[in-house]
Image (cartoon, rainbow, N blue to C red; front, top):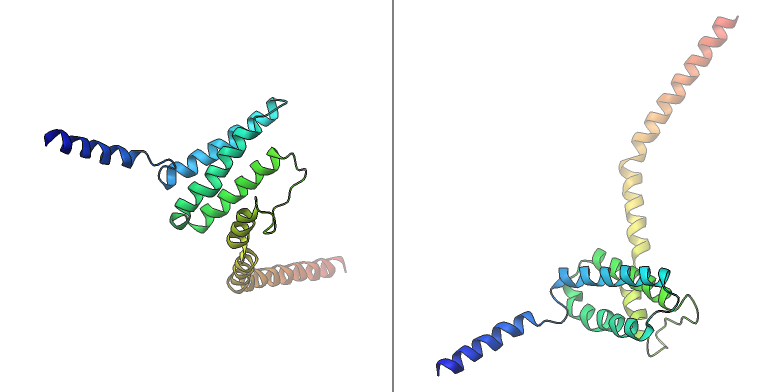
Length: 162
């Protein structure tokens, strides 16, 4: 009975540490390392191990990303897909790239890119509008004061030159 309890405990304990994707932070760090290592490798080596890249890329972008997606903040998700696309383009040397929902192999990427980057323009627009509402009136006031000061200086120069 003790052996059964010990084995059950060990199996339960080890299964917690066997998470192939790690926790969210480990996943993000490992993916960043994967991308950076691949970029460095592609700069220094004439031929790269494409099949190894493809296996790891798919593991990160399909399995691990799906596992951690809901835990990731939008900024982390955008950074992830930005880095994924950099690696993908390096891997394919910018040639014959078809990331679309019609392409069976890349449909999941197209869907995620659309989801993650949809509305980015609206966020920027809202930021600019907020900036304009909050900051621009003060900037205009300062500019007008500067123009008025320049105008006074020009008047003084004209008076002095008479």
